[in-house]
Image 1 (tube, helix red, strand yellow):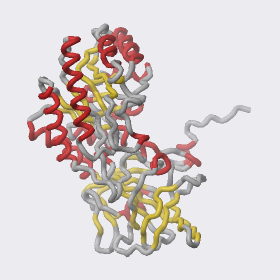
Image 2 (cartoon, rainbow, N blue to C red):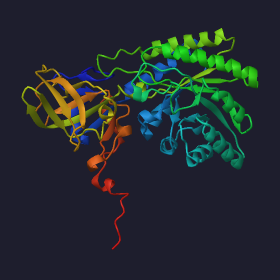
Image 3 (cartoon, rainbow, N blue to C red):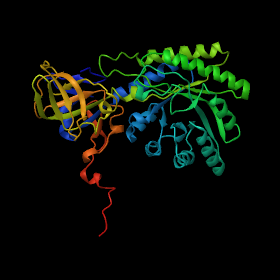
Length: 435
């Protein structure tokens, strides 16, 4: 298993993260347990900003809350000078509970409700990313009622399909997100927005996919968007100030993944975007990005306790753990792959190929297929690396299982990000039938 950030193997062969031995963390907080490396989270955030700072370019890096959203994570983003990208009432509420400056919050989403738009306007967020024609009307109506205005970007589907899994690709023409560039919807949207002075149109937004390992998709998107900036300036006399190229930078889950380091890819992204606007005779606007996975994925490790085994001769050996698709549905959703280790026996040689099964009553409740491990015994602790993004975010209570705790570790101390659910929590919103 690849070690990330402050993860290390102690002399006794035990895994430690943030100078905290995982045995002690498991004993204190129980399993399954999400462990987050604070030092690595902060370093990833800074890695996005340094290339812009070195180039002397104005920029906004907005952490995409959908990857992992808690009050504590929002507070870290705030302390690192980040913006936040939210996509729901719940994420916005969490950010505001964290004390995050609302003027540094932008909101995305392809079907924002009137309630969500009203909440965002009342909170006075800094930027709304408008996704469709209905949203233009709803937002303008709310702003007229409130006698206020807001900066907006129009989200564009630029017809760029990044090299990624089909279920998480969002930039191509056939997409539920944004105004289609090829059919001229963006021009129609600009004309509609101009009817409402409450909508201050300051730029365009594009998101071309996820798990992107190189700059080529961004290069094509930047050139198509720069061309649109020129067209819109000429046809509508609007000079945009911001270009948002979304997020999507990939991370290493297994040795099959070969992502470009953040700082290198950011430097390349700056260069191709500068070239795109220079080619179109335009000044470079403020660049905005919305990374999520690449901030928190590798900073997260999940610890499980091993339970039963099932050996099918000449077929497969299953090792079951005390979690599963309820705390990590990514394999079930789109075949995600992970690296694993026995957290208390990191130096033992692998001796068997096993598949890690969850405890849900679903045959598809698997966490890892065909991984090499030392012989796993009941009571061992199993670590799965790179589980910081889209794990707790998509966790569920299927089979009425309790969602795990999450802890933030640094320099030998651990702080709770999320408490472990209790059985009382499960029934908190249930309503008993009257006699």
